Length: 241
Image (cartoon, rainbow, N blue to C red):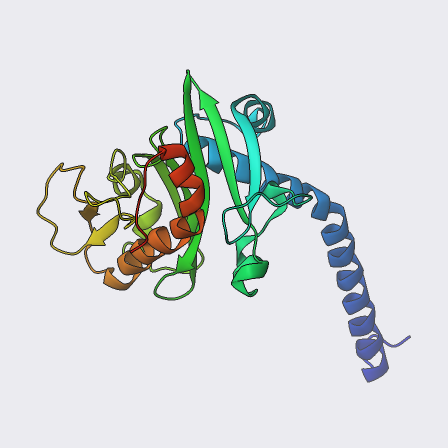
């Protein structure tokens, strides 16, 4: 065939498109299970990191099974739902359902002789979704640690919610106020409370007010899904604000 002809160019282009399509399809099919497994282990790593357990992808499952003693799915009344695997619940899908149909997963961990309650979070930032996990200590009030992530916040501004300095500021903050109301932890612009751990506030990220507000709303709103569960752990009466 004449390599300078139009038919040659046309056939060559078709062959290349088919070859590339088959290659991409094969790669996606082959790597799909590996990608899912990596996502699953990354989720375990994030959950464990809220209580201070550092893991690698290789030992994440071993440590998760060792320290996470319960995985519970709750309904909107705080009652345990039978037959729902907490680890498989995706908040991004659950929150699109009517509240009475949603499942709220929570993880109970036992580490170095202490019990922790770890809840997944999901909310809205400036440009897209934000999410993470928050771990509470045995009093079901004091923050042990948090992990935040995002889909599309601005680098150097809203994306700073993933940094250690920001997440560390939540440690030892309280999610109930002095009146026993569940208020979460507010990310406050111009915060001047220093290291006060009883005011339910941390300093915001400069230039990222909307993302900071999104974090505040996300923590309070999601934790209220667990209020009956937390009340049982506190063994005291608290009011819903």
